Length: 250
Ligand code: NDP
Image (cartoon, rainbow, N blue to C red; front, side, top):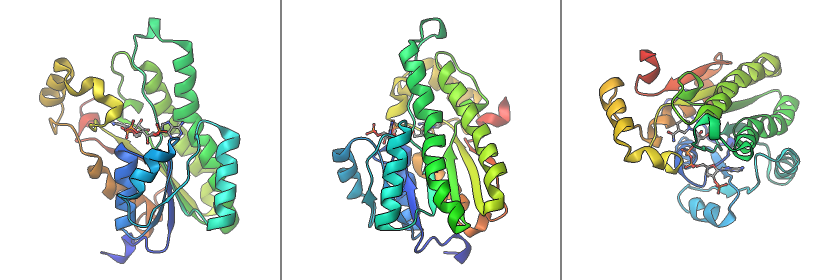
């Protein structure tokens, strides 16, 4: 591997890594040499995921809870050592026409998808700032730019993730932190199970988007390793679309 992309000896927390994109990113970071810390709310799922990521530790906590995020990260830093790379990946989806969207689901989306970026980002950044270096990679979405029916609040949270990433870079670059986002296209995971066999969606994906197919979670690993590594030392506040060209056609 080119030394610029080598993560040997770096410790990386990936939130929401018991399955899906987070688990694939955790595996990819571990293959690049990082010591990975897996997170989610379900300890049993994390123990299972741990068997799939070489040398991984687990750190269960709810990223939508500010105090719990802060306590878990401070405790882990004190007992296990520094978290040098943070991938803010945990996220949820809820589908409903906007006029029927439950207020409780709207609130949960905000707390999980954008609250988590603040909660876990701030908790990790305090330690990173004290050390004068750190990497934060937030997982946004093509829905930061692209609206589709019945996911308006999700779209709003992902637009906010992209903008909060720019704000993090603006406040923290001078402290030695690099804060960027990856905006994935459509990746077949549990999050979008409702779309797997939706004929209208699959027709749109095949005929109207450049790659004409679903992406695989592993296809996000290169971007993540790049943004976690020394190869991206002057990249800050950037939103990297990894989407098979979907946003090229807006
Ligand atoms: P999944 O539903 O497959 O996985 C979500 C993960 O997040 C799980 O590990 C889940 O574990 C964890 N999680 C959810 N809520 C919390 C919480 N409050 N605290 C801690 N962990 C939590 O989703 P994906 O892998 O598809 O999505 C990952 C990210 O990628 C999300 O931010 C999503 O918005 C984004 N994304 C996904 C796309 C796709 O096409 N799949 C496209 C663009 C962006 P548990 O429930 O056990 O806590």
